[in-house]
Image (cartoon, rainbow, N blue to C red; front, side, top):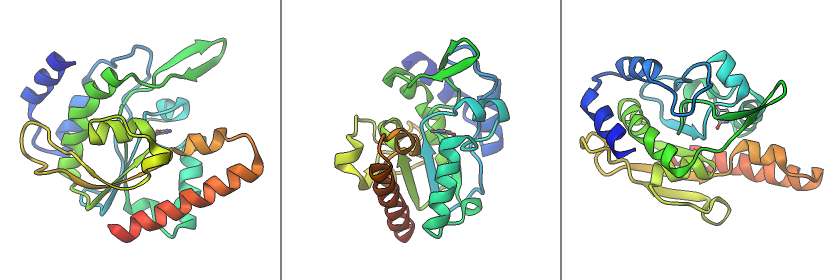
Length: 212
Ligand code: URA
């Protein structure tokens, strides 16, 4: 990854649009993905939400958070009184990683090396968006943003993120907030447990929005 990161840093895009062109032209680190899924939302959004990587549906449609986890996120934002259209939504990793099982494409978590590979893009992207608060959904986003492994359930809440990218653009970093990933909520087995965890997720989003 170090070599790839050094090569990326030399590209020095001077706008979000140019960065996005570079991302779209790049080879997926893990072969198979249909396309890079770019961030979505206004530059200058007060809040940026960072997920893990596009899922099956995001990979096909080329938009972040449109599949089941994205729908849960959208509903939770609504319940928290946060307008999704005013947010910037993106992912730590821009390509879908999966294994094929028959017709199904089964999501694979990115390794820490893969997260590192994509980190320069994420930091550069946030440097253009300049949100007041960056929300990490789940451990992969928290790793990408903080540069260290984060135990989401133990450390959920406000957290300072190290935004340095070698070019000084992001100064000292970001005011951050860590919460669970919506796909974790979808996987919880019991209805009661799932309802409770979803209510906590909504409360986190409300609390994060108040910090922005
Ligand atoms: N999960 C993510 O982390 N990101 C998406 O865009 C969709 C699902």
